[in-house]
Image 1 (cartoon, rainbow, N blue to C red):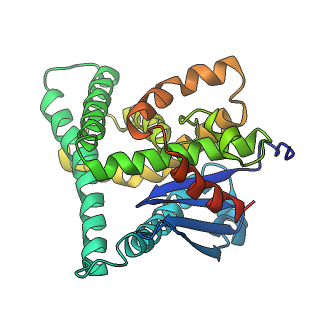
Image 2 (cartoon, rainbow, N blue to C red; image 1 turned 135 degrees about the vertical axis):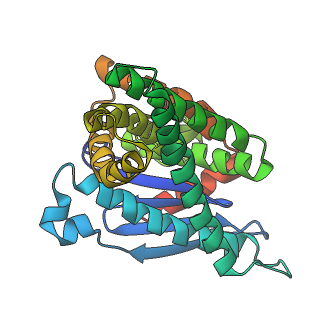
Length: 289
């Protein structure tokens, strides 16, 4: 049996198209199932800005930096996985098409989760006197939009396969964190829901944003959108530390209570993987630990 890693020794991951990306320390590996049913693996060394520059590694700053880095790495990984998964396609979409789609997705997220709630906030402020209550209502609107968006992804067959790879990623990381050898039998016993998941992170972001945005008072629509964009690094930094903290003490009862809402959301974004999907996650993790 492998030795159990220290709680601060963290592996991060991401499900991609027909594959899994794993990151541990300065190592990144992505494993993708090819149309021939082989596993193609790409490895790289990447030193995070939080390690290169001490200031960026400080608590409540490192969260936003790490989030930005993972977004960039994630986009590059998605492009690579799409290229591998469609290597025999006669007409592949150009890479710029994928990049534009991803940027459009980011713009849509800002519109859905910042602009629309801020507009409704501006409409409701004339009828609701309590700023705290107004922010809670806005947070509930943001949560409803988020849940609706997640539910809509279940209608896409390609996304359901990504969610299965997401489950394979979580199971494999769980096995490693518990000091288990990376075998199919060991990994299949673990849950698909992990407290450090990006889905849980989004839930924490929604809750923290209610508290942080309450400090803004009752600005008009344009000001509120601007303030919320400026405060995104603050919200991300606080949320990151909470996710790290609950992940470190996930065996404590209070941590389980705090993690519960995010874990329930993962019932949407993770699915039980097949054996061959777990094998892909194993190959990715073995390259970084």
